[in-house]
Image (tube, rainbow, N blue to C red; front, side, top):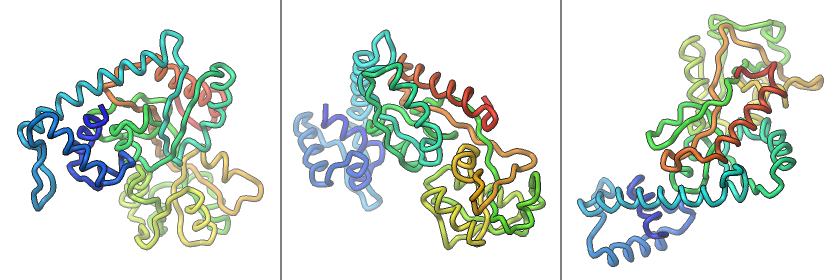
Length: 302
């Protein structure tokens, strides 16, 4: 099973280094496991070309069968851990750091009260990495934003969250009730690393408004962007939940302004299509949606 899982990941990315990173093993270890699989099957599965790896005809056949076998085992494991009662056992949740810190603590409080036996392991990561790690089996499901951009992943919407313009308190816009696209044309934006979906959304707004996007700085956290904004080095867009938690305070050195018309991002849970629709995943989605409805009704749209 280990060799099949390793080969399924390698067959998808067709690069030993990248596959080893996703599987959290060394490249030599991965190579040994693939060699052992080829020996057991009695056929060469991969060819090395200057442009990278390609699957042999036997490799394509084994990759397809491996995905099916792993899907069956995955479904069996979820039935054994979730059962008819839903949430239980261990679930591995990947999440974007632009979402989880401002939402999941309240969700976790409710889950621990209702499901004391549930062990939820949460790991943050950029949107692109989350999807790749989900497909590699490191996560059971991920909390992310649309689009996920992969045919093997099911996305289940939870709520929509506004993106707000963040400016330093000395900016003339700080006194505005809203900001239109034409108000942004003279501004310079800073953004997150391209591995985050939010990067694309900020870039889109810049292009629509005719604003400048700084290319000499790309942050890895919303806090880093906020600090840059507070120093007058540019403006940015931040999600509504982040603004509620970190910006809307009396001592804040930046302020947020709604855009007109609003810019929204779709937040949801995603999991591998091969997992089916486990009861535990559906219940997790309902709990997150309930928290958004009851505690953030003024901040998100269901």
